[in-house]
Length: 544
Image (cartoon, rainbow, N blue to C red; front, side, top):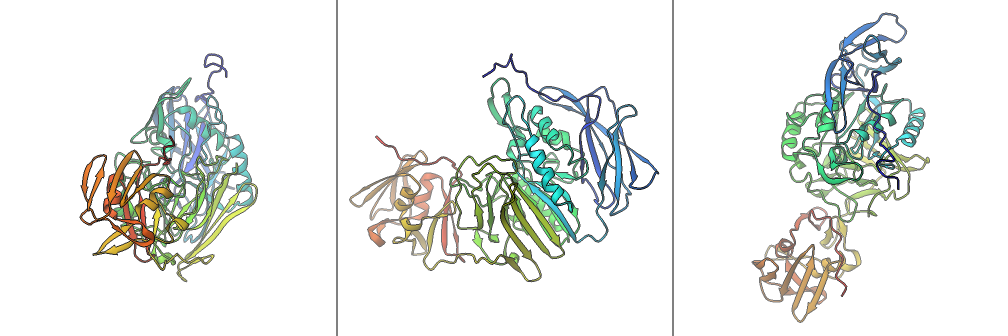
C-alpha cells in the first residue's frame, strides 16, 4: 500500500465557484425553497437569481453566509431562501456572487391542495471504498437511472449514514460530488445517522481514536439553514420536521433521545396532516441477530408510536414490520406503527447476516452487492411503498390504506397457542418446543438454560443445578433454591427454581435476566416473551 506521503487525499476543497449546490425544504414547500451552496472564504457573500420558467422577469434573494470550520479547511456556506413563490411552479435559478455564478438549475414548488405525490427513500449510501478518495460515482449513476424512470419524484428523504465519517470534510465533499445533477433540483432531506456524526481524532494516514460527536457538528454546521429550525434547541438541524402535501415528516437525529421525544410529542400535537411519517436511522425492530433498540426505546417510544410509518436504515438490509405498539404485534395500520428498514442504497452489503424476526412481515438480507431504493407514493389516504434493487428486482411492495384500515399484501401477526420465548425477536424454534415459559404465582419462569444454549452461551448441567455464562457474566441456579450465585454476588430471586417440562430447570425470569443485564417484555396479544439486552457481542462458548 502507498504511504501517506506518496498518496495525498483528494480533499475536493472549496473554490471561488459555487459547488455543493442543494435545494431543500426549510419552510412552506408551496411558497419557498432553500438553496445552499459552498465557496472558499474569498467569497464574502452571494445571492440567488431566480425566475419562473418561461418568464424573463428575474428576482434576487440575498444569501446568509456562514463559516464552516472543518478538520482540514475553512469554507463559506451560503443559503438563500426566496419566499412568496407560486405554488406548483417551476423556477429557474443561478447562485453565487456577481462574478462567480453557477449554471442555471431549477426547482418546483409544491402545488396547492396536494394529496397525491411521490418521494424517493434512500439509506446508508455512505462510501469509503478508497480512504483517500471516496467515490460516489457509481451511486450517482444508479440514482439518476432511478429518477429518469420516475420523474414524478418530488424530493429525496434519507434514513441516515449519508457519509461514512461525517466529522471529516473529505467525506462530505465526496458525498456532495456524488449527488451532483440531482440535488440541484430535487429537495434533499437528510436524516443524520451514526456515521454522519462519527469521527476520528486522527483520520490520516490511519484512523485513530474513534468518537461520535454530540451534537453532530459537521452535519449541523453545513446544513443549519437548509432545513427547518424547529428541532430542539442545541440539536438542530439533526432534528427537524416539515410538511409536504397531506403528510407531516419528522426527521430524528441519533442523540439525546429523551429530549427529542419531548420535542417530537409537542410537534406532533400541532399537526392535523393525514400522514405522519418519521425517519430515524437506527431500526427499532432490528433484524441482525445481535441488534437491539436501546438507542431509542423506551425513551422515544411515545413519539415514534404516533407515526404511521417510521423509516430506518443502519443494518444495510431490508425488513418491514407488522404494525407495532408497546412491543405487541398487530394487523391493522390503526393499531400500530409500521417500521420500514430500507436496505442500503450504495452496494454496501451488511456486516452481519440478518434473520427474519417475529415482528417482520417482510424481509430480505440484501447480502448481495446491490443497491436498494424505496419509492413512496401517497394518494390521499393510501400510501404505497415499492422497494427495489438497482438491477430491477422488486424486493417488496406494500400499501397502507387508512380508509379500509388495511395493509396489503395480507399478513397476519403471529398469535401463539403456547407462550413462546424469543431472544431479540428471534424465536427459539425447535429448541423451545417442549419447554415453554410458565406462570407460577403470577411470576413467569422459563427454562433459561435452553435459551442460553440457543444463543451460544456456555451451559453446564449438573444434578439439580445449572450454570450459565455469556456476555462476560456467570450465574448458577439450584433446584429448590431462590438464591442465584452470580459473579457479582448472591441474588435473591424471590421465587425458587423448579424442575418443569421436559425435565428442565425453570428459573424466575427476573432472576434469569438480571445477572446478564437483560430486560424482558411480554406481548400479551401475541403470547411471547422477548428477552434482550444492549450488548451486541456474539456469544461463543469457550472451547478448551
